[in-house]
Length: 172
Image 1 (tube, rainbow, N blue to C red):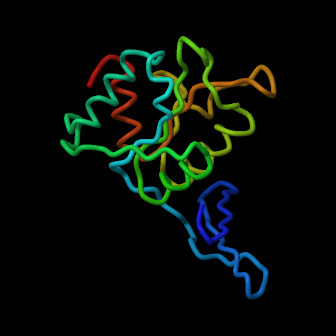
Image 2 (image 1 turned 180 degrees about the vertical axis):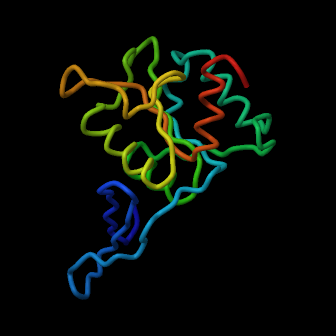
């Protein structure tokens, strides 16, 4: 999504970013011990499916889009349609990535748990972020029953995820 190729990974205990140096054809550590900001002002969600979203989630989005969330600041939407790009931006600048279930097209969520949402959640959590499957379950605590199982996912800055969790539980 730019002229830079970056590899971000975690072995536990930290998240690290390596940038491809084309002059030596190797990845060089450029972002050691990456930390996600505590709070952002960007949300990422595919609003094409919003008509089927849970009312509590829609209420949360309305609050942050209109500046009536906990920060009093209006959030902006950035969604490029690629989880990798959207989550990378969230890691670098803060905010929240949302891929909820909907009652029309994706009743169990759209992203595969084992090889999409859980690995990204692992990276974000080791950078200080949070990831949930819904208002009651952390994403990494979900036990898959099949390799291609889909699950809703929400991940990002800890304060943003905490605010969403409170909304999904019925608070604000």
